[in-house]
Length: 488
Image (cartoon, rainbow, N blue to C red; front, side, top):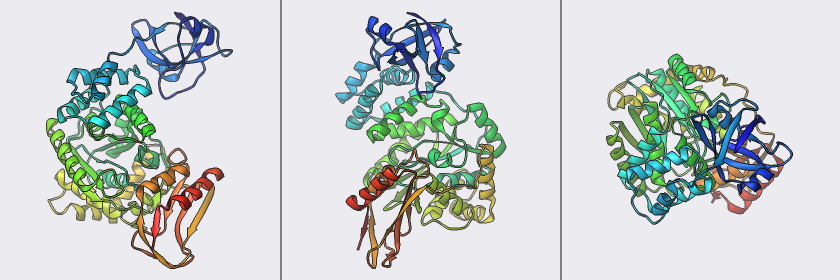
């Protein structure tokens, strides 16, 4: 089919093409089918939507992702044809049968994901297969290599490139504090963070409250040259596009398979050129993993890192409750600023950040073994970390001040003298999402008390925040029904 390009000037987050209903009917093309769009020797696979009235039968409307990839102009002619079934479909079926995949088979899956040849449901089958059957270390290594080879690289020349990553699941943002301390000490910290998968906020979601997190690779190089660090959303860079698409589907499924977690983290560290990597693995009753699983995960991370010549260490953290006071993008970044300004430790946030920052300083030789925590605290207490934080935020076109509260709030009060017995992290995460997190940056929860602390009658237990009255009402109902905070 030869079709004229019509610009509607919209971005879909993935390559999308809209066909006229009559043309689609004649060509036996349906909504969510894939078509290949070609311009000269360049081509892209796009998912199909169908409309009538907004375009002519011989026209095709394309999203920004398609027009940018093919460098299209209005009214330019392109060819479009149904995309053949991807070669990776039978390979995914093979994995669903818990059979081991070869390096070439894994590469076909990753390449098809990168090229947009697989639908979200097909990617979901792959994620489910990995979740059900797991992967060997060799399969995981092949997956990492495929994700990296099918993406871009940052290509920094610095020798002391360091990074930190948490396997997630626990609210609280230590990353901005760690990056500020370590870059102030002279380390290069190209932090490419993810958005939320299983928690109400990823580091990118929290930082987006005060600055931009979407930059091109040349822009990031300039930021790093100026500040020694960056804190950006990795999904915008194309460093690991297959992983970013997998994460989008994982978020819908609320799944984060261990093998995919390993591949996701390690591929992005390799893509930015990290030579020193610290992995935080929270474990506990309501964390993603228990202690036995955490130890097993640590072993796998270390074995994988050896295959890629990366100096990697893990910190296992028992997590019984959120790390800070805030849960949700804006509330978590407020905690970060309070710690950096030396206004409050924000429960465990300061201590956890200092432990990890200190470990990285020791790993890279910036501090002698056993002295990392002390050096990290000196940098934090001196104000140098906050100065570095401000420098990074300004370089990312932001500012630290002016964070407002959500429009609506509800204080949950103690009905009698009591203490907090337990905080169910998973229910707290679900409560924050009910209130609008992470898309609503100002939504979330503020914990006035933590496990083991006493509360007098009428005292605040938590405050719920939302930009929407219906979502606040839903949050109150969720709290009353599910009791995420157990009192005694």
